[in-house]
Length: 65
Image 1: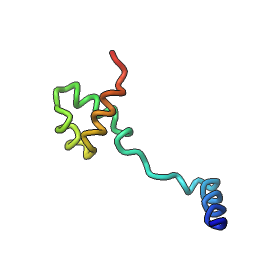
Image 2: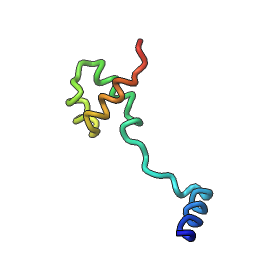
Image 3: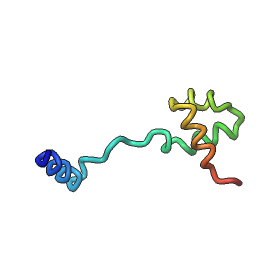
Image 4: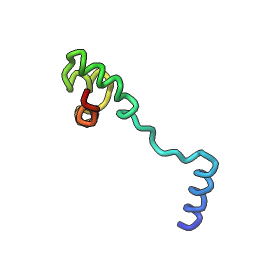
């Protein structure tokens, strides 16, 4: 376990240990555009390949215009 932690620290310092790339957050702008154009949450999720709950979360966190 100690050696594993050392390896992880070494990889992080070298920029190799970044974790999983956020997919739904990266598409937040597209989600807002599709919802504004009249698409439903389910259609938007299917179009972008993310879950409906992710669409709802992005919609709820959208700044009120």
